[in-house]
Length: 502
Image (cartoon, rainbow, N blue to C red):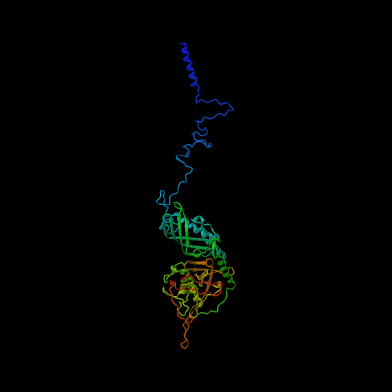
């Protein structure tokens, strides 16, 4: 019994020895100095209490909780996810936010609110105009690429500005702007889809040039068309822009040179014009019965440069009102209408007028060829002999535009170096002639007019004109009438009229 009990006790001790000698896992184990111990493969990373993988171990398994954003535990963060999407510009898509329409009380473009323009649209239109006038202030092109959706459009605009700056730098007077004040008036807005809008705006601007800083030069009624593309909730880029005034309207782009293809010709025209200074001050052999009333002409031009006289038809939408305006100024200064002979100049009504009243080239023909009754003028005058009320015709290769001199600009010695002019289409008041993009310019000196010659009953008679048949009355809108195709006298320029109205 004792042996059996002893045997059972021995078996129990052996079992306890095999199963009960494992150390307590919570009990700190002794570490032998200098001997590196293998970590327990089930033990968590001692540097990461969350138990995530060791970032230095490329073979460690991906932890399913590694996408938790530590700064916002309620959200997951996928490193491959794109940036949060911007508000949609499509009203049919989730997240669409319409642009903020400008309020009538805070509109910077007149009519913006009534035409549904947004603050962002105003921003980009005004920014482009500001860069244009800053370029003319500094006579240095200001980059505009940030406001266009295509680089080609931006470079075209910069080339336009660069060419105009070159023309103004070639002037005898300082034509950089010392100040300006422009306004835009929205006259139309049309959406194309939901991301593109077509805007029409009319610009008026007051400018102060360095050479005539005491004079407010005004330009009025320039029509701009813009196409804007939406890039965000209320952010826009200019897709297209055009204006109906030069240099935009007549620009001929040389993309390689970054300027107008004709710029070298323009600069040559300016130099040729300036070469006439030495011959200024000459007299005339012409005679006339009545003097031209220059003060009356000045009063009329200043009154109607920026508006239309309702007593006359306006031809703004039929090629331009410039020569019509110039003829009205001469008439206000006392020059009578002339319906005698071949050389005629009159306007009784639309459809009952001579083309020379409303067309620059035809007027040049009349001024050059009329004898006897009516206008006495010198269409081949020295450029620097002009006076207030004289006609100044402009172009680039043709008689394109008629203006009237409101005041000569003189240098310190009193010599004429330029002119302030008034015109219609585009409407200018006291604007420097050399600031124009038209670089061929001709002064027509107006002296006065002659009475109807007395007819000798016993003689051959006379028609009071130049002895030819009566002039033909033409419709200015008739495309069959070629306008002026006669070239001016030798002065280094042989323009051919290609504009049926101007």
